Length: 193
Image (tube, rainbow, N blue to C red):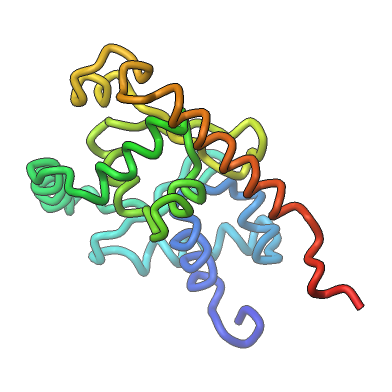
C-alpha cells in the first residue's frame, strides 16, 4: 500500500489520470517511490484490472499513458463528431479572441482575462484544429496557444493582424499581462512584520 491508502496499481492509475498526458516511466517511478521492478508489476496489474472498462494502459519503451480502449473507438468517434457538429459558442469564441489578440496565450492568461476556467473551451478549439499548443519559452511547464491557419480561415482572415483594432488591443493585452506578472513576482507586503 502507498502510505496506507492506495495499492501500487491504484497509485499509478491516479497519477496517470491526473497527468492527462504520457509520463516517462522513470518519472512515474520517482513520483511514486517505486523501483523499476515494482513499477513494472504495478503497470501489469493495472493493465489487467482495466480490461473491459473502456480504458487501456498504453506502454511504449520509456513512456506510459491512459487511453480509451480500442473497443470504445466507435463511441469516442460518435462523441467527437457530436462535439464538432455544434456551434463554437460564446465561451469558445471568447477564448479564441483572447488567443488571437494576445498572439499566443497560456491557459492561465485566458482564464484571467475571461474570469472563468477555460479548459473546456481550449479543448473544443484544439479538437477543431483552431488553436495549437506549443511549449512556453518563458516557463517550460506551461503551454502557449496560438491560432492555426484553420482559425484564420474560419474567421475569414489571412493573418491575425487583420482583426479589428489588432495592434492596439494586442499591445494593451501584452501590457496587462506584463503588469500582472510583475505584481505576482513581488513579495506580499501583507506578510511582512
